[in-house]
Length: 187
Image (cartoon, rainbow, N blue to C red):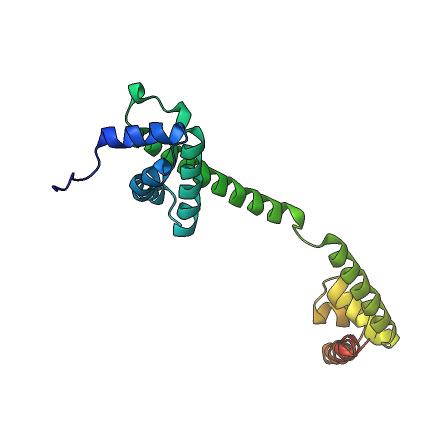
């Protein structure tokens, strides 16, 4: 018996019509003929192989459910199926892109920075600094306040306090060492 060759356009159209009528085994043959080409179309649009397989299954299910709507007068069954596959693949890509954009916006909008934590940390730091400043001698505290809070140079601090520049430098250095030790000590 001679080989009938590959199924033609008319064969697929007839098989799809038979599947629409609910004929046993007709959709199995439609599936055999369309699953490869449909996956290929979807794979070119949806780059991820896993997602492409998922979309291909959804498309084949849609073809099975809507086979009664196929009209051979408007085009071949292969063209109709390919159109459904391409549309579904584009929908998946758009949906994935929208979900990714939504996640990025949500991640950025949720916590731009921890303002409360930062405020608490700054307040605790200021309290600790005040406590450490209170631990300095009056002369050291005065030299530090003039140099670091008022922005004066060693020479200006020395002139304001009426002391030699070397003494002003020594007071500031000793005060800084005490402050460092106090601030680094365990709470």
